[in-house]
Image (tube, rainbow, N blue to C red):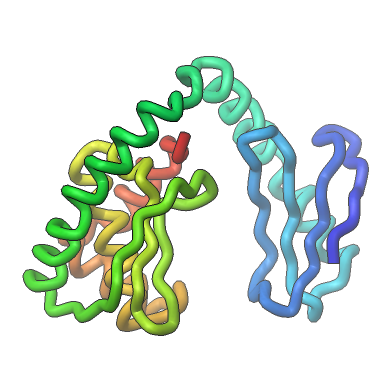
Length: 187
């Protein structure tokens, strides 16, 4: 269920209460929209108290997002997107195969999409869908995303076991790489 709430300092906040949500979280969209997500077992009052406790972080994140949007390059032209798609189709399946072989993962099909909301996803059948915008990342972050999706073939969630496996695959650098990846956006 989505609703709007006007916060004194943060402005309009989208409240998203869902059965699928497992914990209270705050996200800042590229548009600057702040979203407060929380499970149905948590009251709106408690979720708003959480938002208040993270107010300074949200203000800083919103400002950083605004600065990134102002300094980012123009969106890719259709021609550039087709070049990225061709490069992704040529490069990513082979790299996924290498990493899967190196770490002992098994996966199904790979599809390349022009997703701008996330870098990739893994289905329940272990099929991988990858954003062609992965080609805009440095190689080591691209590998991190690919390993993240391959780890989902073992753990279809973001549990402690999933993070432990990903941390093992990244030589103990999972948190560092995840933090750095957050500074990039599929464009």
